[in-house]
Image (cartoon, rainbow, N blue to C red; front, top):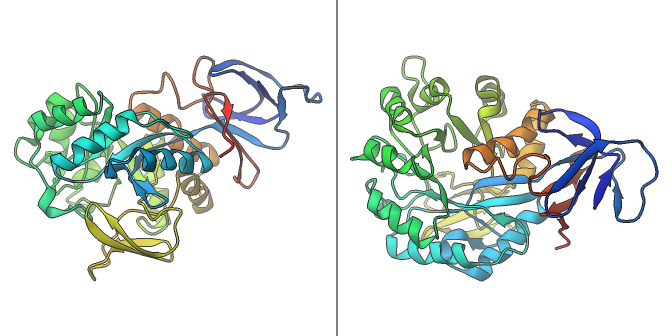
Length: 375
């Protein structure tokens, strides 16, 4: 299979007129000559040819949730993500009791994708702090527990690639020191000050979960996690739906963190659904005009209803260069979950996870492992 005459996004973060040849993996990148396409070739003239997007922080969509323990629901979600340009994803669980998380781990381990490839699991909790729990259920919070992590990871077949933890909690730093040897540890849903956050990064954490949300604010005398992540060279996530983070702050984070920025959806089961009432981790939420909040009168944001494709479109509209937006949706998240050798760029030997976008960044075609997704 070959896609020809497109403006291809290369591994060095620039566009070039290159043809891409692939089967399950990419086999060649060659200069385009503009000649008419032949059989088993696709003409991408005037189009962008870019790596498939990754979503390393997504709870759900189309009225399904990664914590439900439903193979059918996960299969539906994988198709939904593919339709929206995500070719790899990490089902993200909520702060729940172990007896609920274990069957969720089993289901994520065993289900068969029909769209986006399941490449890992993100445990967003239960090792979070009470004051910054956000939409996470307080009764399910758990102190950082290495043994519990191991039980969950074993139940998943070793699929946990990212875990969010509040380092100030009892034994939080010990947890980070041990677990960071096995997967990426992210600081989030935390009251940690700068010194505590720096201690977490020195202990082995290397990421920050949805920067600004679920943590103390940036203050010129109290930089907290935001300043510590910058000083430590950590990667950071942003929810770029225009509701969680003001576009000005998105532009500032981009200037500060550069290619350390990761775009996520943090989408809930209401993504791809009409406004209405839904559930999240045992708590009722309501979505109105695309804004999802706890249905308790507090107006607490409870995640988003967007896709990573929409996040890319948004940040470009907010003023970020397209090249940097693409890196934040491909290379950086692949590096976060330690899979950049396999996915995250259009490079010979990597999986042929490829998107064709028009000049307005509308999605025209999706290839996952070299196969065009027709769902």
